[in-house]
Image (spheres, helix red, strand yellow):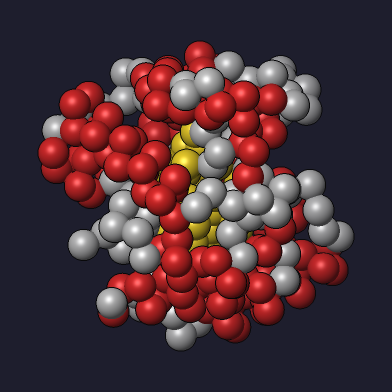
Length: 257
Ligand code: PEP
């Protein structure tokens, strides 16, 4: 049985004060749910330390939204993985569609980041997902294969214990349009089969696959009830405890059913 994992991606939002208040709200609401569900919040870099302090010992962990693969040094504007571990960050989100499609990140660059993050002992949430035109052209599985092959190049079966996959169809991110439970389940099953062929059945069964794309309190239960959906990566609805906590509750309920 895979333990559900719900993570919030705060993107480039918040002030210092609102980030601390949001982190405290999530920590309070999630305290009773972290017995069965892993929960992480992903603030912008500048608020990582404050958010880490605000979640305290609630069991809520902290994720960065990106990192650079090089050792600390002359890389102006970048953030090293050592800096993330230094401030108590446990996860790093890599390959998010906004980094791929707005900032131009390639599978090759994402793979360097994945490898470097795993070498530092960080957990990686690797995002994959197709554009709407790729879905319409029946290319979804081919795109997922390419992104998995590229992003996980040279990542060993042992290292996969620290990797979570987030299936995020680009057309569903921040659009209010959610993949149907069937569409999500079909992509997740494909990703699990990919891991079975590339690695082995144990890795395929143990690796968690989150769904991301307009997850809300009113659609979370249905998505999380799918056999291959092991959690959610949540953008917009993670920005308020009132909408984020019910999604964690839905994950908690999914464990019992
Ligand atoms: C995301 O940013 O990863 C995301 C899924 O956003 P939203 O929930 O707003 O679609």
